[in-house]
Image 1 (cartoon, rainbow, N blue to C red):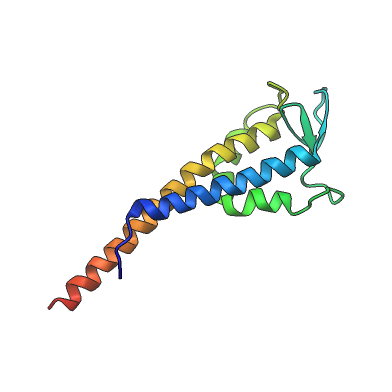
Image 2: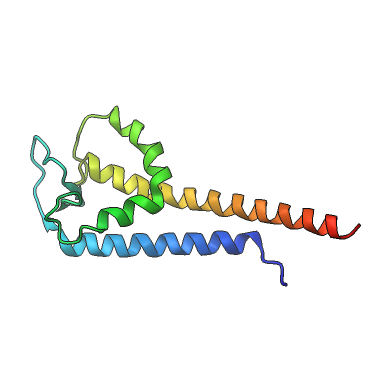
Length: 137
C-alpha cells in the first residue's frame, strides 16, 4: 500500500470545494436578474454584484442551490452568522448584507476544507504509525 502525502487529501478537498463554488456561482449568475439596490433591502433576496437571486424562495428556479451552498460549508456558516448579526444591512459594490455573507462564506470555506484536510491527514498518519508500531513488536 502506498503512503499518500497529507497534501494530497487537502488538495482533493480544495479542488472539490472550488468545483462546488464554481457550479454555485455559475447557476447563481445564470438564474439571477439585474437589480438596482434600494432601501429597505428586499427580504430574503441575495444580491451580489448587482444581481439578485432569492435562494430561499419556494419559487426559486433551482431550490437545491441553497442546499449546495449551505450543507457542505455548514461549519463556516455557523462561524460567520454571529458576526453578521451585529451588522446592519448595507449595500457595497451592488452587494447587500446577505450577498456579503455568502461571499465571505465562499472564501472562508477554503480555509475550512484546508483545516479539515490537514486534520484528517494528521489523524490518519497517526493511526498508521500506531498500527505500524503495534505490528512491529
